[in-house]
Amino acid sequence: MTSKMTFEANKRDEQISHDTWLTQQVNAAFVYMENGLAVFVSNEEANVQMADFKAEIRSRNNPL
Image (cartoon, rainbow, N blue to C red; front, side, top):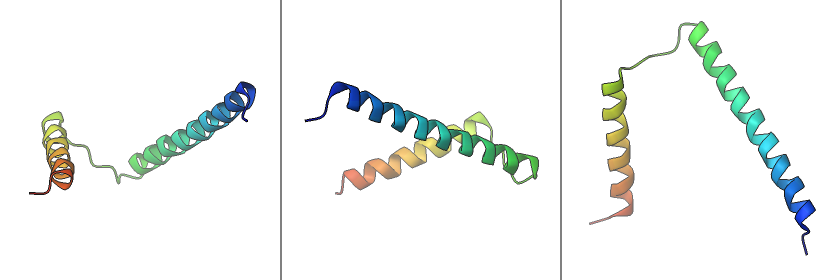
């Protein structure tokens, strides 16, 4: 049986792991940007890309 204390400790470890991962992702994005490799898109283009992405995911879950 898992005690609440053990659960909270595991949850805290998971959070630290996620924080570490997120920090690495942000740092990598800044390095990418500083090296001139980043591509910025307008809000309108981002919305179009997200709509296409959502449509693709929905079509996978709804085979006709």
